[in-house]
Image 1 (spheres, rainbow, N blue to C red):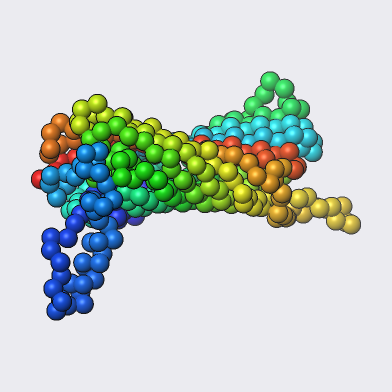
Image 2 (cartoon, rainbow, N blue to C red):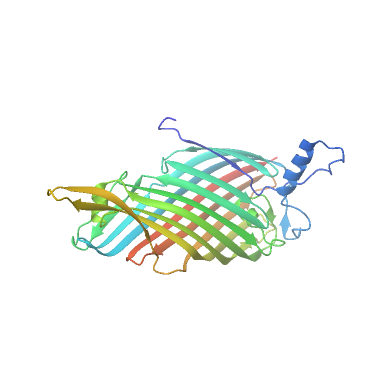
Length: 354
């Protein structure tokens, strides 16, 4: 794949509603029965699941979209009493990843094809399944285009610039939700416009999260000033209860969505890899890597997740939507090392139904 083109293909079972046209006859083939079962699984507009006075269904089955997508992250690493260098602090931010894409959908199926325009991420994969009552989101990306600065207390007033290529970050995030008031409140209406929120409503929502990440120093100078810390690998699992609200004053023509939840992290595993210099009897030395499991300072701690969206429907055929999602990730260790990372994604979509 050439440098100036990076193509991403995402196949998503999104929230666009679908329903069976008719019951399958008893003598249907196995294939037909399989198709019927699949359509039932992605059905978002079962009358028993929604109140039609609060949630509506688009009039048209086919959909074409044009989308611009942006993503990025911020990270800070702090350490106290690091040998030789005292207190250290590193702040990093990625290039904004910018993609443009087109998509087509029919009822519950949606296929999108996008082009990476800014090369913000070297790898970026997103898969989503939005249902009225529950849903999951999967995001995996990596980048070595981080930049920022690194400072140490033994060098007051000075900061070492961290350039693109000096560090690399990999992150994988899997989160899911469960809506308790799915009869009156629709998260898909805000996030993928597969349903229409006709009257304002909100709901308590349960969330679950698993994430893994690795931050590593590719430049040995960065690792040395960091007290020999070459990489930080971490795994987290958590759950939380939050609230979401859809505000619409005019039967769904305009929609404002806000939702957030604190996440209680109950599982955290950290593996640090250190560069260690050993002296040999002949006076020479050699440098090697040592990996060790590092305990967190607190067994249970809080992170968070938040969403926002604005949808404007020009008519039954055309809509515009902007949405954003941010994950807050953090931990601190017994050895006085702290990591805080904000992973975000935002996009703008124009959709045409027919």
